[in-house]
Every structure is written in C-alpha cells, then in structure tokens.
Amino acid sequence: MKPETAPPGLSYSSSNPESPWRVYLEQIDRVVPHLGELASQAETLRRCKRVLVVDVPIHMDDGTRVHFEGYRVQHNLSRGPGKGGIRYHPNVGLDEVMALSAWMTIKTAAVNLPFGGAKGGVRVDPKKLSFKELERLTRRFTSEINMIIGPDKDIPAPDVNTNEQIMAWMMDTYSMNVGHTATGVVTGKPLALGGSVGRHRATGQGVFFIAREAGQRLGIPIEGARVAIQGFGNVGGVAAELFAANRSRVVAVQDDSGTVYSDQGLDIAALSAAAKASGGVAAAGIGEKIGMEAFWDIPTDFLIPAAIEGQVTLERANRIKTRAVIEGANGPTSPEADDALAERGISVIPDVVANAGGVTVSYFEWVQDFSSFFWSEDQVNKRLERILVGAFSRIWDVAQQKRVSLRTAAYVVACERVLDQRRIRGLYP
Image 1 (cartoon, helix red, strand yellow):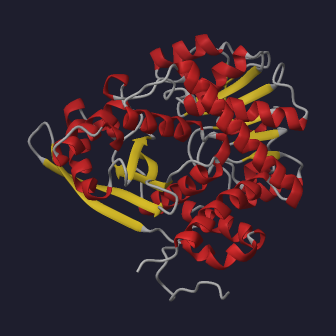
Image 2 (cartoon, rainbow, N blue to C red; image 1 turned 90 degrees about the horizontal axis):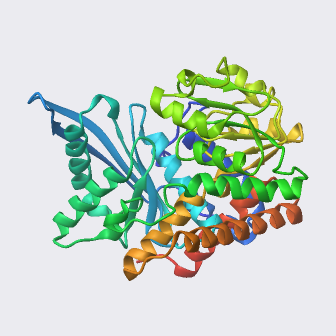
C-alpha cells in the first residue's frame, strides 16, 4: 500500500526548536519505523482533525470590554469523543494546544480508553481577573466552542489554572444552550454536579503507581528512594505526599516561587500547608532555599517534572543525576534530551502513561454520569491502579521485545490502536 501523501503547506509547523508541536511530530517520526503496515497511514497522526480559534470578548467589572483569544483543538476522534483539558495562561497559543491535543490522542490510546485527543485554552492571566470576570470569560468561551463539544463529541476537563468551579460554569453554560442538564459534557466537576470521588488526586496518584511499577523493574525500591519533584500542585503535591507516606525521601521541591531542599527529606505535610498559606514553597520556611537551576543537579533516584512542558532540555539532561525520570507533566522532555538521558542510562517513563491517572478517572466520571450510578473512592482507586499497572506492563513488554525506549514503546502501542481503528472504520464519504 502506498503511504498517504499530502499537498505541501497544509500542516501547521514551527521553526522554533522548543515548539511543542515540533516535539510531537519528531516523536511520531521516531515511532513510524516500528508500525509495520500501519506506517502507511501515519500521516493522519501528523494532522489535527479540527482547529477552532475564537474571539472571547467580555465586559470587565469597570465596564470596559476586553478581548481574549481562545482555542479548542480536536486532534483525532477515531477511537471516540475528544478528551482534554482547558488551560488559562498568558502564554497559551495554537502550537501548544495542538501538541497537547495530540498527546491526549496518544495518552488515551496508550491506556486503552475509548477517547480521542483534544485540548483547549484561553490566552489570559486569570490572576488578574476578578471572580465575576473569570465566570464571564468561562461562560463566553464555552458558548464560542459550544458547537464542537458535548458528552458524545468532546469532553473538556480542568488543566493549568482551571478547576472544578470553571468546569461547573462550563457545564451550566452548555446545559443552558442545549436546553437540558448535561453533566457529562465536562469532567473534573464538583461532586454535587456529578463529579467523581478520587478525581482531584488521580494524576498524582497515577504518577506514584507508575513510579512504583518502574522501580520494581529497575531495581529502585520506593522505600528510601530519593525523590525530587518540580511542581507542587495537584500532580506534584499529591505525588510527593504518596512518596513520603511510603517512606521515600522527597529531598527537593520546586514551584514557580522557588526551590527548597533537604538531604534528609522534606516534611511534605508541613511544606504543603505552609506553601498554601504563603503562596509557594520558597516562602514556606521549610528546608533550604536553593537556586532554580540547582534543582537539576541534585542526586536522586526519581526525578519528577510535574509542572509544564519543555523543562528537561538537552543542557539539563546532561547534568541530571537520577536513575529514572517520571514525567508528571505533559511534554516536559525534548527529543534531544531523551537521547542524552538514554545514552547516560537514565530511564524516562513517558508522560502518556506516567500522568494518565487524571484522564483515566475522568473516564470513570464520564461513565458514572451516563449511568447516574456513582462509585466509592476505594472502587475508583482500585480501578485506576488496575488500568495503569496493566498499561505500563504492556508498554514495558513492548519496549523489551522491540529493544526500544519506553516512550517509543508507548507510542507503538497507542499509534497501533489509533491507526488500526481508523483502518477498520475507513474513510467517509
């Protein structure tokens, strides 16, 4: 079969070497040689099915009108409705949202959830908006993307700087527009509106589960392991708590306020409480404050980038002193850094399985909303662990069989599922 071809100039690309979309495309290029007959269909993975860019005008509290730019990208819907978060950040752009939607395609397929990949965002600094302005922004943005989201089309969720309140406003706005209550249009909602127990902690919990499984195979016991975590929110904070509870030593934590370090291990419960009260770990008064770049030089067993993409650069990869990188964030490691870490014998557990706990429990929430039958937290956690452990085992086995990295193995598993489903469905019309 001839490979799919495309006219030149129709794919979005970036000359920026740090472009998230460029990183994703290079990851796809690396996996194609391992896809066999399905490689002929790989062009579909290099394209986004649908890209929506919207103007989001709102009235500010002072009566002025301000315009923001919003995005919703659906990368691939072959396996089911789109799934992916909404982020509010001043640096949100199309390149980033496209890449994040594509990574969601890979992530949902890697853990075998019946979703495609999507992502959205608004270019805004939410810290500069009042509560009512934030509500008006959310409702207007939801109305602008209303035509492409829905419980069986595309299901948003929280991401950077969004939370269950934002999801409640999105659900209510969508419901008003369609004329009935549609709890399944978003996940990560408050429990009172059909949210799931366990959702808030799911991503961080999944990071811990995957680190434990990787440690068993790499000969790194969780008890006594030295851990450094970048990011101290829903992902890094929960992961830190679980590592500490299992007698690991969390020796360093970094957030956007700074970095704190203790060779004997930080008191995570005290640090979490103090950081929330003071606005970040740097002002918490716990541990020794060190420079932001010094974080990457600390000897550890597990290094967990759990903040934003693009943090593990080639330069940092050549300095990192760890046995395993567990990617709690989306896209934290560049392809060049991947190569450098591999050459140094450092295992990288890729984001598409390491941080898949959040989307997995989002799937549980979506299922519960459809049935109006809700599970206990114990049921949620056991099902989460079973799915993630099974997914990691499958990826580990493929890596061993094909003698490839865990990232390549995860992409092999995911891309085979996406492309095989697309092959079976065919093209319409």
